[in-house]
Amino acid sequence: MQALADATPALRELGGLVRPGGEIWVDALNRTCVVNAYEILRRRFSGRPQHLRYESAAKLKAELSAAGFVRIVRHWMPIVPARWPKLQRLAETPLVGWALRRVPLLGALSCHGFILHGERPGPG
Image (cartoon, rainbow, N blue to C red; front, side):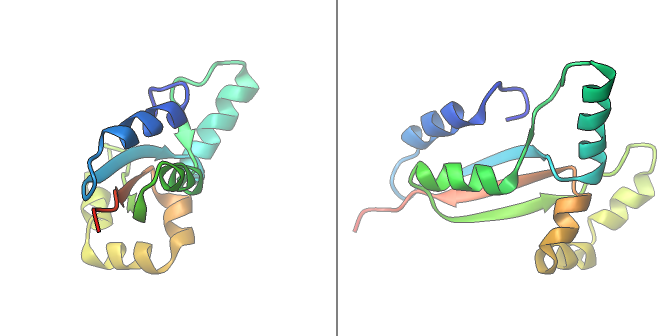
């Protein structure tokens, strides 16, 4: 989604392609992550255009719902800078995954990206 000018038309188009009983998986950059929010503000104040688009997980979830998807689940993606590979291994541990599922604000503020998973209702 980060390379598109607007996620809404893409989600509507993808929504029309998913058959009843099918699934959709969408990944995006997290607008509320502290590092991403800083980058957005830094570019804005320096007069540089945004080179990527950051999304609100809640907004994309609403878009998927409007496109007819149900049981939409957000999965936080903890990605740390490549220069700290040991921290990445820590970020991928079951304990961190548990914390991100239990404390949504933790994911919102610390995760670089997120994935949304939704289902198209099946027949019957």
